[in-house]
Length: 502
Image 1 (cartoon, helix red, strand yellow):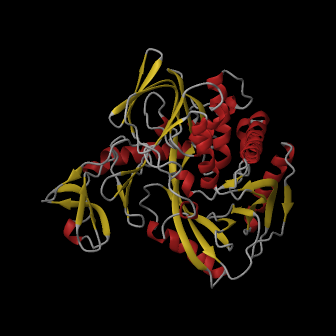
Image 2: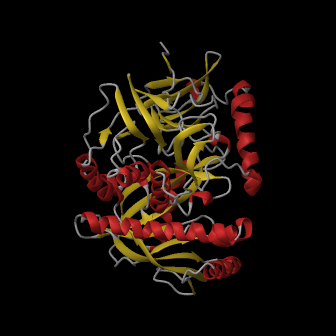
Image 3: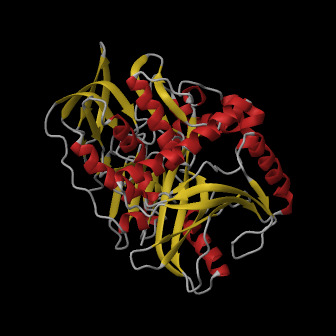
């Protein structure tokens, strides 16, 4: 059950993996919505384009979203106005509104059936103490020219104190959208490769040599669309953002499902939207239970249960059909990093830090990066400059990143494990004492043990065990591995070292 509706309702792709050395003009690393949208915007430029993914196309974060196409990114615009000023806040809003139109235009032009529906979007509160925040946000949006509306009622099945209504937003089925673009890319000559993992990147003279599986791709332009940048230096993105995990549950209801898209500004944050399933019935998608990836101070095992209990409190007869989780990069100043990866690496571009709003921001990024490659001016590129470093905008989180890294890299490595491996119960895991050494062990339901060296291959932080997903999670930068040590999520590019307990 722990897979998304978007995956269950579409066929898996079957593109070849790399089998030879390749010379190309543009190499795009990452076959999610950013990589595919960028390839599409470059597809008629006359440039040779190659797109590679370490797994299957559109099976990462893109396959585990709530898929809201919106410029409504929680309570953001009052913050942008006060922190960066009118021009930045206005540009952020306009760029995302343009992205909504871009997606709509592509769908119409290519005649794509992807359940695209215009919807109003709401940020709401059920807490009187948060009404002032709603009022301030409406005021900010009005000053920026958006026809936002302050309301005290909504179609939600419970009363609210206040909400902001964003008109003219949308939702869709992300995999139907992207899988429809792939044959268009192929027809234009884009080479698409799956199960092709980037191992190393070197910049030699004016070209990039990218080592993929056992082969090499040489390219003039390199686009890092891999969710989290897999190259550490000189970009230093690991000190400029963190990763956040969140969960979604899809349910069928006996009642008619309300229209619109919703997210609360209360804690815990809860998100709602619906979609039409293949059987014609509406599916209500409820998201929440957010926590920093690798956190050890939260009850991760209750993540789905908390959402399901909340749904049952509203709809006692709700039928749980899907569960899925995702991981999002969050920049320190809440603005994504889009554009040049580093001033020292010309023609390398990055797009990351979408803070859970990747459906629209991906198309902002695709337009900025494609314009950079083609030599076109882009009105919004200065807003998202990826080489910036302004931790003062979120000094608390910047401090948390440094503290967690120091703890996991140094202090925690030399601390004693809490338990010995004999104390592990079946179907559980952890960093344990095994014959005097720290070992990461998972015991399956039958008691079989899988052991790994419990240090992230990215920068060496000690991993934490996620018993809900049966994964090893990095509390420093968000890399994730399955219980056998295989990579699930970057920035790591190497599997964990396996320990033979025999």
